[in-house]
Image (cartoon, rainbow, N blue to C red; front, top):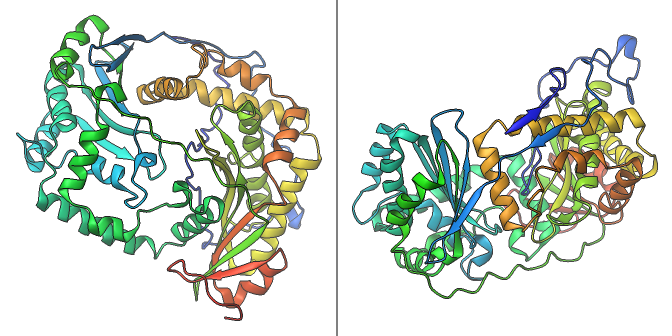
Length: 500
């Protein structure tokens, strides 16, 4: 891999969310006052920044090698011999979207219990062997994810031993009754704890308001799904969906295809394939009218705010315009929301935006936590920034800074094996062009001010904006009602009658 990056072009890393996660920051501690003698710094241009090269970053990524075993398993290998380690992912094209309608969370439960015992190894033996090898094995599936992923990593010298455990976890999970019961009890306790977190309450209500009955409307599995899950349910889901012709095995690290292929054939070659129809991908529902959802949290000294819309599918041509637009609005400490709500107004320690995308439409959202007494001011500044990005072309320097930051962050991510692995999997899942990641910097650089404004007008949709607040309703209800029709909820997510 050859990367050419100016030594000065190292902007702060920005988290771009590909699922519907939230970025929150604390607002309880005192915040320094705005600029000198109270002078506003809204719209200020940051000074004292290190110079950056205007030359577009050139990226030449190594090409992965791919073979398909007779049973249909795709093996994808990307060599990276910098350090003697490897990372591996078995990706099944059955995630939460493959859940039965009456058993949401089953894909997630199955993945979570894979390493809790196999035909040959107990949960404790698996944990002890993994620890002795200095390795890691994980598995997971989201409630609305396209895929289930089982991953492992470690030293290349331990590849054979790690691959042996990895294959047992995938092919021979036992789903012991006692481990299933422990998992159910842990999960129910965790759900109870999550309900005490305002951030969780905000995310739950936001997802429900956007997606309604769509699988993405859930952020946690229904309690009844957890309670009724049996080892037989898990074994049935595993037997149906954990098939070689429904999977790809991606490997990055100090390995070669020639060395790895016989090991993979030995571990997975006898795995039998079967007919399996791909899970149906439901479309996101049409957006509803603007609505404010207030979750009452009596005594709260701060208000969690979350505002957003439906956005795009991963393959949408607007992906890069939205990427740049999001970076400008709320993609880090140099973005408008942060400079406005924190640096200028001192309402919070941070304000951010992010967006997600999948084979159904994801969301674009902005979030912050503010002191209760500044809830109204924060709402006005959020809406002011939304209108500004929609109505005013982005200044040339601000646009250039955002694009160089995105390209620089992308370049730095290529130093991480997990990022390389994730890029390969994304390219395969969404059938992106073979040179997609090679041309990523050029695609970012090609975004114009007109593209950004068009994306903002389309996806920062003020007519369908869903606004969620978690705070003390006795103090913020009337304030929030100024911004639209308001619905009141309790901490259990139940809508409260009008007048309460």
